[in-house]
Image (cartoon, rainbow, N blue to C red; front, side):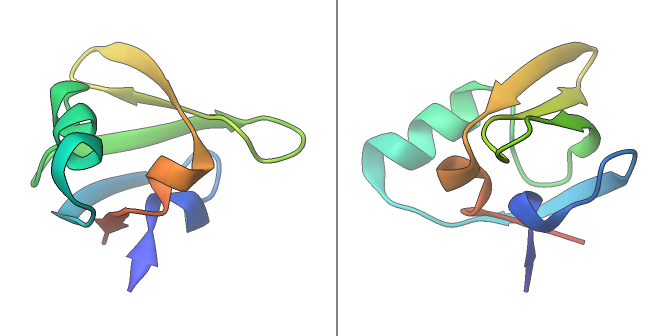
Length: 73
């Protein structure tokens, strides 16, 4: 299982599944990170947190703890 946290800068990936429970999963989905969405990893901060991605025509910064819950292919 590969997660968004493991994706490399410049890579375009597709979300396969969201892990997590309740409010955390809902917050991730509310940001537009849902199954089947293509995500371009734009850059990663020097210490790895946060990760900046482009999806659905906008930019989003996501914490690495949340990125760990997003399964990709």
